[in-house]
Length: 391
Image (cartoon, rainbow, N blue to C red; front, top):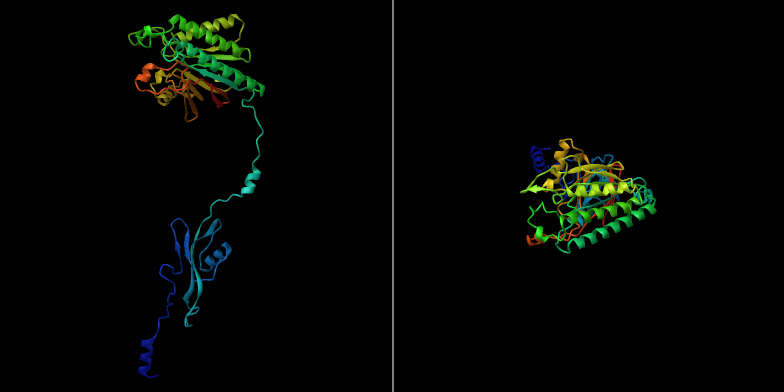
């Protein structure tokens, strides 16, 4: 070979690097992502029929498919007349081909729906209240003597209607096997009184203070006697701001437990004892405003709510820090704000009763919204509660 022939051969030598026949962006290869997945672009190939063929094609390119991973089709394009060279040095031809891009990624958890449904068993019907749990009936904010709306007559009618509904529910529970005791809770403002308003509203009252207390204790006596004929009864009563016996100016002038709510209930306790009823009673201690009771293993705290100034969670948290029992109750029941409320505060449930009074003209004139009356019944036991029903 002459020097000229060798020079010509060198001059015309072709690259030994295969030339890509793929469009831009479809160059075959594997891209590894930071999360451990891979993005695999295949060279031109025939149609791939199923997931098994996808995995084989991905592995043929050198991409691993670990246990717990899947091959997911990201994109597929069909080219009916692609320019293609099977082997370097052969002539290029046109033929139909597919271009595929797959993701190799962690497979999502899969459930067999039929197996899942087969594992579900229809629970047997259970009584609404299990034997031994406590049936709870809480009411508050009757404010007897308050003339607003339908006045004291309307309040008495609402209380009797609420009592009837609570008794009807309890009797139905007993027919279904419930044999537990009853807790009757009164959360304050049982009478309108005169002291909370600084005696400014005396002319508006439709009952005198002694009449207010008389009606209150007679309502309580009927409630307690009605339930005592059916089950063991415990009664818990806390004072409200309207129940206060005496203020000077706007300050309490005596002990905080010096309350018409407590005195009226104490009179009912005396009458029940004289008639031979074995009723349990819980009142706040000396100078107290709140209390706790046990209801079949569920700790329930009672307070009127005016002392919280609308910050129940902060108030309870401080009580817990101060090692007071009400700060660690399962349920806390209050009133004062005249509207139904239910709120979970960690493991503690706060229930706020609605009022049974006739509304508030003063609040309406201020632009406040009225709320429906709401006494509460529910079932408690074993640190839990269920079956909340408004009566």
